[in-house]
Image 1: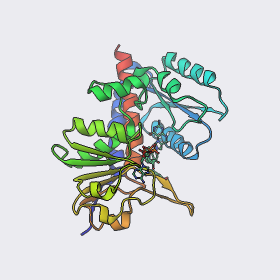
Image 2: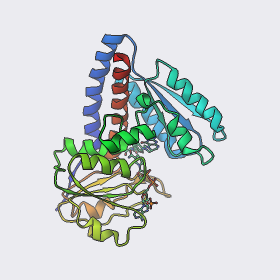
Image 3: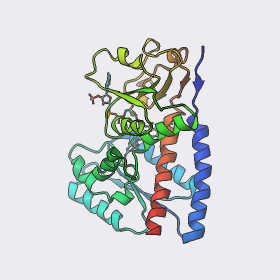
Length: 285
Ligand SMILES: NC(=O)C1=CN([C@@H]2O[C@H](COP(=O)(O)OP(=O)(O)OC[C@H]3O[C@@H](n4cnc5c(N)ncnc54)[C@H](OP(=O)(O)O)[C@@H]3O)[C@@H](O)[C@H]2O)C=CC1
Ligand SMILES: Nc1nc(=O)c2c([nH]1)NC[C@@H]1CN(c3ccc(C(=O)N[C@@H](CCC(=O)O)C(=O)O)cc3)C=[N+]21
């Protein structure tokens, strides 16, 4: 047996086409483009790649993006000052702060400093609270991408057992909440979970968001299950693999996302969608 590939690139192209049309409607209505600010503190190589990818997709859909690149040593005060000026800038509708940040910048200071209406990656406590309560607000784009890929491939979630590997604030935890909203039965596993395989083998849908290359092997997957690989792990020998052993797991899974070309491209498209959504909401106020 060989799993159906869930292609994130074609899905991302579809979303981009939808977004271009939406941005055009916005431009026809308001004469200025939706604006995005990408805030990156130097130091983490992977998020450098992510910034470039976001600039590119913004250009493709017509969002006006600017990159605020700060040196690694930036003081907390300076960082807050930048965020508060972006909060007040009427041409900036969405703000994304690239994670991870250097350890000297307190996480709560940063997340609290983003105005909730501009928090398009859903990292602030207000956004997280809205998500937990089922109120409208912005969702972390990676978690939203996982839901989108399942929905657009018509993979049923109601009543299904979804096992999420990883409990981070950007992926695992918000994803579990979104899955509950979709009426799934959700199990969250993490580094202290003993005998991971005993949980993963029960999954109708298995999501890996761990950051360990090829952690999920074929024996851990129930035959026919859907497997979503969020992991992006750079290999020492070059190249990138997911948290799933693709070659082995594709023999048993019913459907599987590749890395690259799976969740990643969709994450970027969904962040852009939330930015355009933020622009509409701010313009209509
Ligand atoms: N494609 C995309 O758009 C994105 C991809 N990513 C990728 O997704 C992966 C996860 O990212 P992120 O959530 O930020 O990572 P974090 O490092 O913040 O969280 C990893 C989670 O995995 C758990 N974990 C670690 N080792 C194991 C193990 N051996 N068994 C079970 N659970 C384990 C940790 O448990 P504990 O809490 O106990 O420490 C933690 O909850 C990374 O590869 C990252 O690069 C991230 C964001 C976007
Ligand atoms: N606030 C915040 N939100 C994030 O969502 C966030 C972040 N910070 N910091 C960095 C990580 C990383 N991340 C990725 C997004 C897309 C790809 C992606 O498009 N990957 C291509 C890889 C292309 C290639 O390298 O070949 C793919 O999977 O096909 C990867 C990684 C989001 N992150």
